[in-house]
Image (cartoon, rainbow, N blue to C red; front, side, top):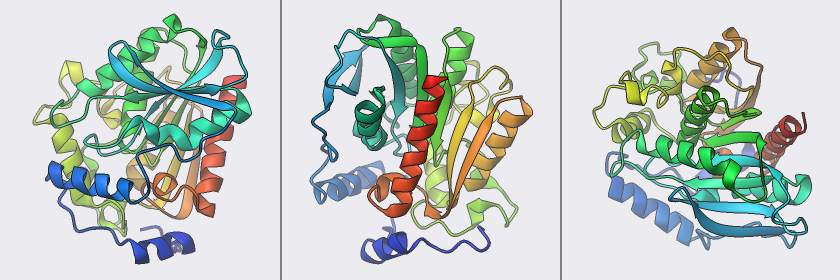
Amino acid sequence: MGAGSALDPEIRDWLALYPAPDLDYRDVDAVRTMTALYMSERSGPAPRWSRDDVVLSSSMVAGVDVLTWRPRDIDATHPLPVVLAFHGGAFIVGSPLGAERIASSLAGDHQVMTISVGYRLAPEHPAPAALQDGVSVLCRLGDLPGVDPQRIVVHGSSAGAALAVGVAAQARDLAIPVALQSLSCPALDAMSASARDVSHSMHGFSPTLSRESVMAMWDHYLAGQSPAAPDLRYVVPSLITDLTGLPPAHLTIADLDVVRDEALDFAGQLEAAGIDVEVDLVPGAVHGFDGLLPDSLIARASISRQIVAIAAALRA
């Protein structure tokens, strides 16, 4: 996997200090406990990149908790382009603060609002609950003060990328314009963990996400339901049968990641459907690197490229 790609030095050093735990992702309580401990050791969950020129607020939209970042010096009723964001966390953990690494700069430097969705988590709320929450917020954007509903980007990380794609597909069906799908380390295929080809990334080196964890993630979210069921048709992006009319996509893909190949395959599916796609394949990077080590050089460069792609799409 990732022939010729060696671990980025900062990631290598971080892994030496914080080796990936031997954790069974089927044990939801253990995963949540580990996540809470990791966050508490880093003074979180709390904003890490507060800026004087950016206002962070919490509210509810369509009954769903959201966090919103917007520029301080622009009137709150002035319509701004918006990023609708979905955090990662294997559908079972995580919070809307996961969008902060792009949201602060988008608001302060590009006058773009970010609304990050606190969607319901599995296994307590299996599919399509999280996707329904995202679509509910999407459909209310036009009613919110200070939002330009004609300039929307969807953004998601890991499991959140699956939600972002599903929301983009629903937006297409509802004739709601979306300028870009911004997908970071996207998990898009519930079946790739069963890949038999040993050259598939699912069988390769991936220190922050295992094949078994991916299987558990989808099991928690699907909860025994067939992803082919009509009300789940947009839950697993790789199974969406008609990709025509979806917005352009920018995919950030870590080379040393079990979900690398499914992300590359999805990029190919989009291109075959006539969708403009930009792939940023990051050598030496691991799953979730831009969230786990956002201050590292490799992550800062990647986050900057994500922000540039989003801002450019909203200016077009």
